[in-house]
Length: 139
Image 1 (cartoon, rainbow, N blue to C red):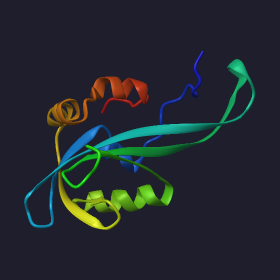
Image 2: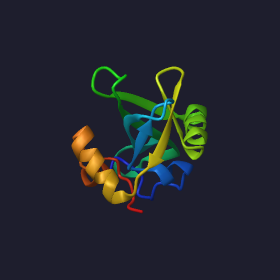
Image 3: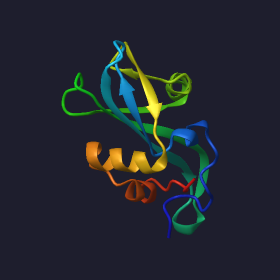
């Protein structure tokens, strides 16, 4: 019995960056580290029990992991949703990632194969496992 609705996650603007890593460049043009975007969809249970649950509208969120010299400990975690996620997506579309409160880095988004390598080597994450854990549909 599932604790999630038996329907696919709705399409979202975040899908383009789902399970995607990026290479960061500092404002001075030097290599700056990496970023990894891990999506998650949360469904609000409106009522019911067991198999007769009723679900509300989904909320799409993004866990964003950053590994950069300026980040202590080794990486930071950001969790974005709603208007803040839309703002971050606008930045990502423009080839930028916000690190900390006010430093923008340039980002080059990697393909699936390179993203899997960065996820494993930099963040210790397996993207296939993350896809299952987060119920993300393959692209």
